[in-house]
Amino acid sequence: MSTVQSVLDRRADGIPYEDLALAFREFDRWTGDDPRLLVAEAAAATTGQRFVGGIEPAVSRFRETFVETGRIDSFADVAALDIADEDLVSALGARRKRHVLLEVASVLSNRPEDDDLAALRGWAAEADQYRHEEDPVGSISGVGPSSFQLLRQLAGVDAVTPDRTVVRLLEAIGSELETSPLETATDRLTIASCEWLALESTYRPLEIDRIAWWTFTDEDERRAELDASGLVGVLP
Image (cartoon, rainbow, N blue to C red; front, side, top):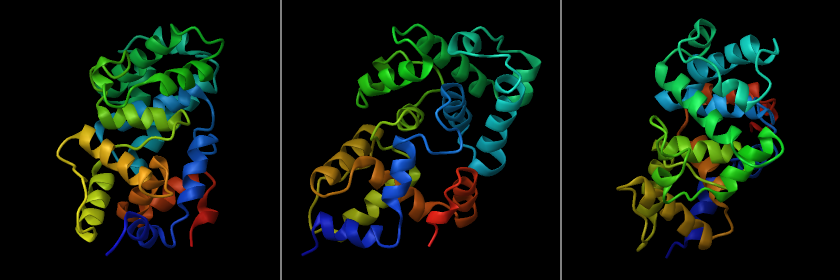
């Protein structure tokens, strides 16, 4: 009979899941440890666009227009932007992305930490993944469970996003186990299922998330994101 450990071992074979998870925890990705860009990345992902042609160009335009020019230095500066600002519209496009960016920045700018990265990390560590709608960030219109969890991941938290890749992985694992409590009917159940896998194996939630991402993401899309982060060397 297959165990959770043996099934995950087979699924993880050939995948640099430890390196991928470490890149999140150590801010060794394309947005680095700049809290303005980390929040912009999460905001850019809220409309479900792909990395190539969607998330990456939007965040890059935001970086060039607002960060590199010194127009914004803090979350407070971001929160003070007008949602209809022409440069912001040109950078991010969809109103949902702009709304999420400004509102998240507003929430985080009011935290007690001494700097913005600490504020982001402090929020992410305290946030309850099972009650996102009660959270000041999770209650923002446009921030669903996946966006909420993505922002926590970007802040270095060992978390899993209940997106389609994770759902597909859970369904595949469930089909290989004789019995299991794995369930993907809701986002909460998807997250809880990944937590159960982590408890029953040596894999951390973020590592399970990265196994799912690697397995069910288009190869060109995957390579583009790794290349942007300088991680193309982890490719087999």
